[in-house]
Length: 315
Image (cartoon, rainbow, N blue to C red):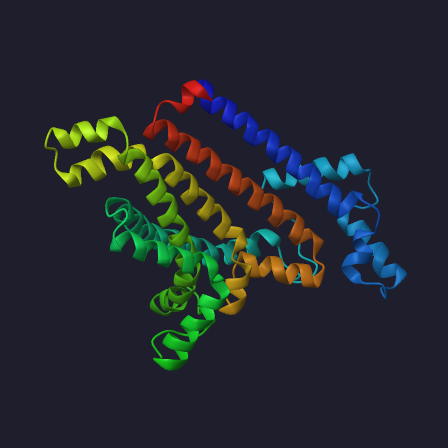
């Protein structure tokens, strides 16, 4: 087990270093002036010179790279040129929106998609199975931003049950903040639930065809125990994988939904930073999201070992 996890940890560290080199190289080393990109073509020479000095562009490339890595290790992310504030402070504020949104969307997808997948496998070839497959096809085909717009039309503008957008802040009104995230969570979670239901159905069908499942049924084991104690646990590997990918995607990939509902999250911060040509924020956020994705993948590997000890032998 330790050997398996150590190999995974080494691979994650290698990937993180490679990603940092790519991000740093694209934004600071490739042809072009980062200061000119941030200030625009009409910037005055003295303003450009001041920004270059502030960004450390007058230093050698390798010195800048290791200084940036050292600052990242101490969570000193520099100062945003567009917002005139510390990137770390700004990112922590945005994470208060994005992390609950991601957790809520993944939880909603699990609570809806996993039971539907189990139901479809149990009722394979029957009405329940066809109904779940229709839901999954529709959920995968319809974009999440379109689902978000429909939810706003029905539950915000039509019924007035939820706000159409904005986020008041947890410290100001906790209940209103929860209500503000309700529709975005559903909009993000429905397509994920559709995908998860298909993955769970496929994994459960493969497991239910195994000999030990037929033996358990022949011994008179209750169908509920067959499904949940025998089949589900052995079908968890692909299910855990897709859930981990869902969560990794939500933290950095909810840009469209955050724009539809005007949520001040990390995705919206990346979008605004690109528009403002704020390379300091873009560089820091991208590498932090990379680290977060690698951390989730490492956690998935640990869960693999706990659920099924075979990966530590084969990997």
